[in-house]
Image 1 (cartoon, rainbow, N blue to C red):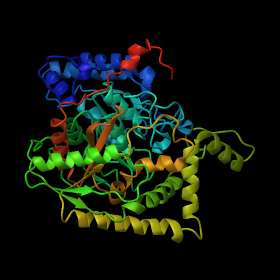
Image 2: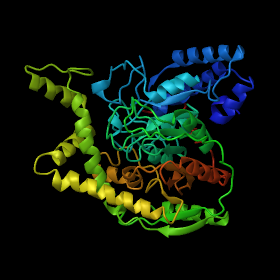
Image 3: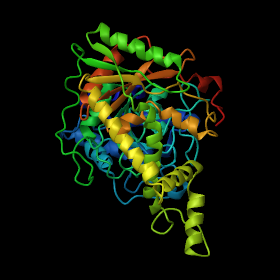
Image 4: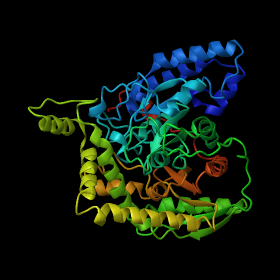
Length: 497
């Protein structure tokens, strides 16, 4: 097995036993990126020199006998809406194309302190607004199981990097499904932690009451390793929760006796693929066979979640993106007046989807419409949270789909925003309620594309999610762990992008 095919846990073990050096590990992933990324476009910015320098420093410290973090020397990719000191952070937007932050996000500082080499910054939908990574201002990212299809979004770059062995771990962000939906479409594990469990300091804001940094990994145990590093209270983030951080690796052993699982039955959802429902039902049966108690759960307000989300998130976005005025930082267009400069800067710097959401949000917050739209959406959000609280009085865990369909074709939904928004229908209510959720592989569609399961737990119960995710991993022996990437050979390295 080549180094880039190994899990983060296996790499950690080999590094700690000095079977391999961090430099060797990093070079293996850099070579993999060179081989694969020109065709799938997961990275906006690659940082090979930075990664090799960091690896060399870790190797030197290990040779001196220093005590190092378990992930020291294991490389990682970072979504390009997370601030990195002296390293371009674009949010996949023209307006920040040349922005170089003067500080690290708290999570990035933790990576550096632990000695994790950063391989690069990954592609996303502009400002994390999208479900396909087609809204990037630079280029779309492609699904490694079928390059003619989307990887999901907005964390499509991070997910593709992990799915193809270009990185063993990655950081993403999840506002309304931006880790879980692409993880489902690409066959990897993606965790959205409890809102406030991981610091948002340095995450470029989209919708501040919903945004959350999370993990992308090949396995649940790898996700636990990364959560041990990034979770915890941060005084720089006013929404950070002052709760003790458990060892997420502990207690992930098999054993589901007495686990109470609520099987979500979705209401009015158009276009829900029957094979997705079949995969969820199969997963529920599997849990029952291994000792869990499964019953159906009702979340009555789920049908209104999509409408509430697409009022709340754009409203917050319209406020957050007001800072991009062409004066303080970022792209600035010429204009004969201040008003003309503002207008041209935003007109040329923002893409179509970002403009659409700013306009929706501004309208919803405007005088005469606030009570009718935004305030009503916030009331629905409160009721959705109560639905979850009621469900968790009866169940420990909720099981559903992570996406209503497998990956759709590139360009299939770009002309119909409402159809694109429906891609998030399985994810957004968890986000609105602030609950932690985990997407795990759930088998394959008859088309050969991955399907994903979604597990949701009470706040701060990430360990239970990871434990159950690990159970499903142990049941999937017949499934391939990674896409074959046959298209690289079939097209002789000449795949059109």
